Amino acid sequence: MTDLPDDLTSVGRHHGNDPPTDTGQEVRSPEGPDPGSKPATPAPALFQVVRQPDANRVQIRVHSARANISPPEDEDTEEIGQYRSVDDLRAALSNADVDGRIAIFEDAESDTVLTDADASPDHPWIGQPRYERITFVPDEGDVSDYVSGLDRPLA
Image (cartoon, one colour):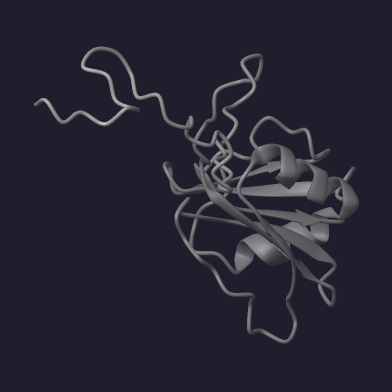
């Protein structure tokens, strides 16, 4: 080891040029969630809102949260939208003008049909997967027409 170059010492660091600090690469780290925000909650269901213009009905169809549903192929039914949050569902119902209509709730747990004469988008039962279909009709005659076509009893 008697042949050490002049720029190297036996102790310490290399006396050559310092390595470049700018390597030409940009490294990004994703931003995390806002610490003041609420924790994420899973969607309770997929809510499909459809309109039947001929019958003057608006209907919510509840599907599994992971479902991918295509728009209805029935010519008499048009899709308003599909929503995974209850807040978005309520906003869509506000735009669909369901205030003051009669709501028909089809209860999957008890296999019955319930009605509420003065429904609004803020009704507490809206957004609960228990009610697999909620239909909004304009008057009592439409309620009996709709319910008579179902295989569930009116509660």
